[in-house]
Image (cartoon, rainbow, N blue to C red):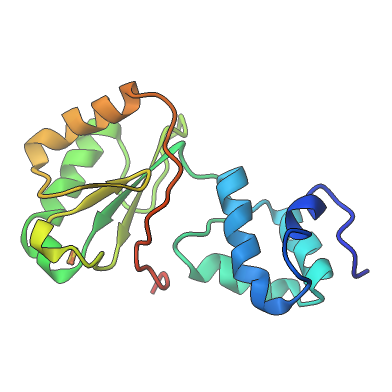
Length: 170
Ligand code: FES
C-alpha cells in the first residue's frame, strides 16, 4: 500500500511522498498529538514506502520525538557544561520537589514532562530552562517552583517556536 488512507493521511499529504520528509512529518505528528501514535508510524511507513523500523529508529533517536504521550508542558533543562557547573543538578532537584518529575519523566496527571538537553547555545545565561519554547535564564533553584506555578496559571501552553539545537538522545 502506498497511499495514506488512515487517520493521519491529511497530515502526511502536506509533504511530498519522499523519505527525506520523514522527520518533518514525525515532528508534525509530535506537535499535533503530543507524541507519535504507533499507528501513525505504520501509516507513514506505507506512505513514504520505507520500513517501520526506519521510522521507529528516528522516533527513538530524536529528543523532540516521543512514542509515549508527553505532559501538556515540557520543561527542558540544559545540562551542558556551563549550565551543569552553574546549578543544573540542584535545579533538577528543585523541579522534582515542585512538580514531582525527574529527567525523562512525565507526571501522572500529564501536566509536566521534564527533559535534559545539550547546550542550548546560551551559556552566558546559565543555568537555562526552557518551557513551551520560552527561555528562562539564570534560573535559581529557590525560584523554580514559583516560575512553574506562574506558567501553569498562565493558561494554555505556547506553541514552541525556538530551535533548541538538539540533535539526538545520545
Ligand atoms: S551549557 Fe547550557 S546553554 Fe550552553
